[in-house]
Image (cartoon, rainbow, N blue to C red):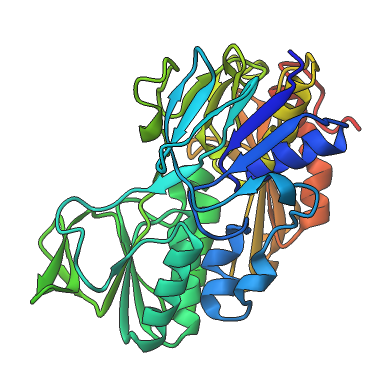
Length: 393
């Protein structure tokens, strides 16, 4: 379809990318970019690293908005959607209707069950979360990071820089084990241990323990208690779809879309909240990373303006921890066969290729970004639904 008016709900990376791409592609109709947060759009990856460490201030993580400043409405949350009429209701009782609506509301952090109001317990998703956590981190002596994924590992690395005693607790045998497999996860475990982080992994966290309304530690499922002045919960996130209850959209671990990111006539989704049909993989997928948010926003803008192209990216993510920059093209799995193709693990610079059924499915670069990018071509065919000889250029 080609729309005369577009309403984008969510002004983080995906929503902003959609709005900017519309303008860049010549859209001259009415454009509204609505966001619940009071802040102008900002970048999220630095929140757990440069911003949390105090190296960058808030101005440095602001995203460029000059092309869409006239469309931006901040501090107004969407609370409902009627997909049939493409009408959004806001918390201030406004109703906004458009020819096309883009859902780009991202994620909300998971929390531990019970006692959500305890002092000394923090999550990290928003700029306000990061600002509050940064202040508490400066005064904390003992920090327990609950979680063992990307965000938890990045927070632990940043917290260690502050001089605090840091413990990372979670059910995986090593950080990011389910995502990266034993080789890279084991290296991450060694990296954190060498920098002084205590790893208490392989056991789930049962609860936060407290005294007089303030957290004093966490209790593990095996009964051990880890003392803490500050507990940071980083156990993943859920698509922010509560506001879509009764909308008429299919919600199942995100907003379910077709291969062109269409959820219903005139309704699209982009970024962390979108679960769309990937034609190369032949199944629904949802990706939580900055690169996908931008690329999917651009794809949605094209679809709104009449392009008829499926969205079939090669997934990409990265993480910076201490002096290690890890970049992953594709989706590695813990049970994949892994071969080091460039560099050497012992040198702290290498590229590893993951294979399933003999075919490359992912490439991981550890401090070798250029070589990993070159190897990406070996896995691209798997995401295009094609058969391609490995090593062909």
